[in-house]
Amino acid sequence: MGHFVYILASRPGGAIYIGRSRNLRARIAAHRAGLSRHTERYNIRTLVWFEAHADFETSLLRERRLKRWRRAWKDALIMEHNPQWRDITHLVPE
Image (tube, rainbow, N blue to C red; front, side, top):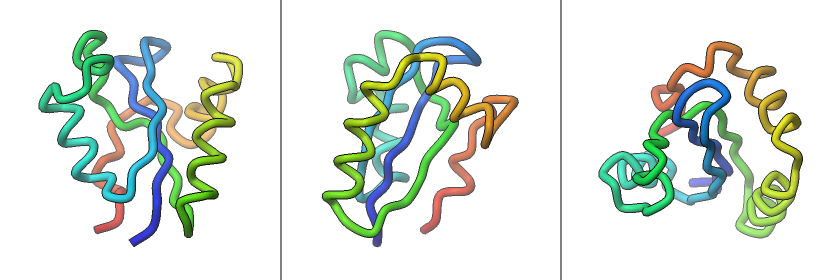
């Protein structure tokens, strides 16, 4: 299994969370169960973007880069792949 970098959102243009995980489906379930304080506090539950990486190092570098981006760039990245900000959990590979 690969490594994933992902963005969760509360709503279009709302609060977002950027993270990475080796098991993205389990991590999304943990966010939705309220096991992350930030996502629980701001009701961030919708997976709006993700990408797969072959190894830990590349996913770590990508996550760190994305976290330093301006908000407008993050929104543009989401809009490019998911203009309606719909939940795309069903697209995560098994």
